[in-house]
Amino acid sequence: MLEIFGRPQRVCDGFARRNLLQACGAGLLGATLPKLFAAEEAGGLLPARAKSVLFLYLYGGPSQHETWDMKPEAPENIRGTFSPIDSRTPDLRICEHMPRMAAMSDKFAVVRTVHHTHNNHHACHWMQTGRPWHLPETILNATPDKDWPAMGSIVEYLDQRAAAGRFRDMPSYVYVPAPLGHLQGYDYPGQYAGWLGRSYNALATNFRRRDAKDNPFFREVTDQEMDLRIQGLDEQPTLTLDRLNRRKTLLEQFDIACESIERTRPIETYSRFQQRAFELANSAPIRNALDIRQEKPTTRDRYGRHLFGQAALLGRRLLEAGARFVTVQWECPDGYSWDSHIQNNDIKNILLPGLDQTYTAILEDLSTRGLLDETLVVLTSEMGRTPGVTPQGGRGHWCHCFPMLFAGAGIRGGTAYGKSDKHAGYPADKPVTPADLSATIFRSLGIDPNLRIPDPEGRPTPITEGGRVLGELFG
Image 1 (cartoon, rainbow, N blue to C red):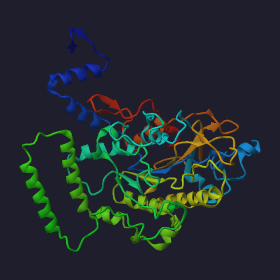
Image 2: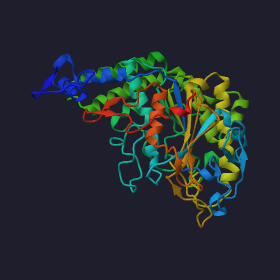
Image 3: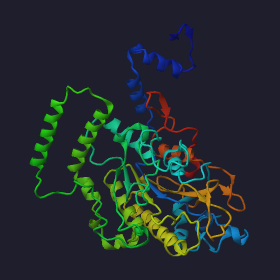
Image 4: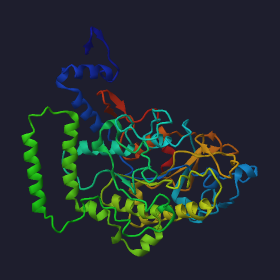
């Protein structure tokens, strides 16, 4: 029995965890906190259903009434103008403008009762991390040193720890076609490693708009625009590998000359960035994965030549190359798109048909290549839309009930999980939270949702808080 401060404490299976932490912090038992964290991370692995996650993020908030939770019996100002069509899933009516998804609904599960309390787009932090946004809504951009780490960053952190410094051909966490918000002039929270450290940020491509009025999600993108190879990763005829190695040697000599400078955490972080940049510059798998021109024209046509379709195809290529958590985002460069506050024909003519085309292409392609069984495909947003139509003919923000989709990795296709009330305003049963989403994703990857990692103060912090694994979705 271990005795701390003269007070004996023990649980039935050994020492209480707090006691063990105290003992390790004091250096007892030949252990230290870093060793304890390493042991805990190693022990946080469980049998995995998925090798990787494809996280499809529709920024702005598609309306549940115009997608997968239609209420044709509701009054017209609530149900809207679109009609439902039958799907291959019992008790699931899908919008008439997504016929391919209706015909393929036996391949995915619809969760209709996602909810939280943040009725603002900064809920993108909650949906990508499982934790609520911690700053006032008036603060628009990410705070990289304070935000909770993205789920992808935690995967990156664990994989880097498991690699123990060995070079990996492909980072685990990748973000395409651009960081969320960059096409709008913002830098939204939830997509970064936050306080975990910039070393665990995603490898992000940086698609650019033609001008301030351009919406590349609404048009065909060119091969030149889709050349998203990271700057410096393309082969330069005048820069041989021998010359590149000489440059690295010069950098190392400079670093040795600076050893007298007091080493701080930012300097150490910079050193890691430098090493990572050099490794990426020599990574043929990354260059090849990002070269979408290698795909057959028919495949590119099937995904859709718009930005979301081509970015989703890149996502599949990155998964094949070894990425473990790939986020493909569809944001709102025009300020509206999925954020449908006003009435227009974009939802009918562009948004729903584009999503219908790309989502079904992803599932077909992954299945054909034998990847669907080992890839968890998640389609979500940060919110839904109001049950009532606004005076402008659109719908406002609504965080109290909205849908998301799961497919692959053992998901029981043809499932409609949870029911909303008669106006799709609130969950009627089986409510689901962002923490449930993160717990389910981590568990599918074989990561214990109760795993603890050190926070900035070195305290053990669980990667999820209060989340429940949605085991009913899996077969």
